[in-house]
Length: 261
Image (cartoon, rainbow, N blue to C red; front, side, top):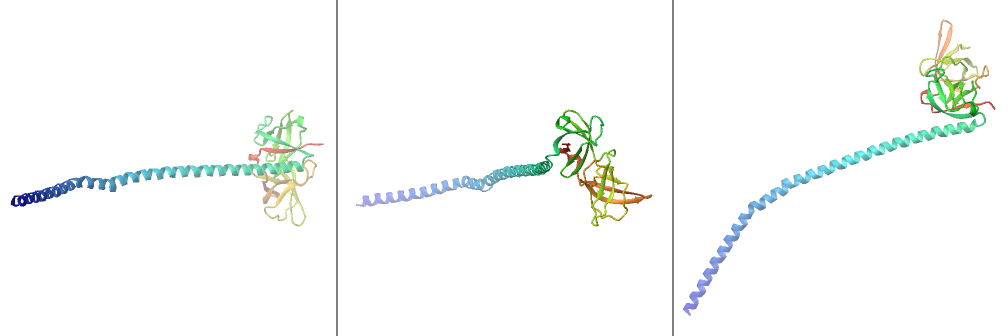
């Protein structure tokens, strides 16, 4: 019995010692793992988060570039749409004008500026000539107003002297509220400005009054828009006016030539 008790005590002592050793070993193992776990935590909190932030910043930058490209593309497409709308509006006006003048006018595309015979910037070459019925002296217009007059033709082309050429003279009149017409002669002047000479009346005329062809002389039909009166001056008994043309001669692409029946 005594031997049995001694053995049990020894077993219990050994078990206690083993438990202590196990606890100590486990604690040592846990303590030994601390630097690794701490390092992993620091890496996750600082380094990994910064790397992740860099990737997110790169993604945001790429997305920003993509959005900028899309905005630029949309802006370009909008600009193209506006150009198409403007071109369609111009063509609709031209077609409407052609329909209204179908029996007397033909459409002609502008080929170049500066005619071969004149070598002047105040001359246009167009793609309709004598085969299409164009004759020398024919008047040329657009929906906005008077362009000029044909000065020469070939079988397939014509040269048009513009209203801005000082050699072209057009009988004109200023639209007035009281019905009294102030008449004169339009000639070319400085760039984008026409001169109105030989005025028949020196009365006060409101600025921005319309200037139209008068029909006098039988060369140009009455009532074609020429421009807007800007100012009238009276120097040395000579009354002159400055007129802003309704036609932008620098952007002409198509014109209409009056052909005799």
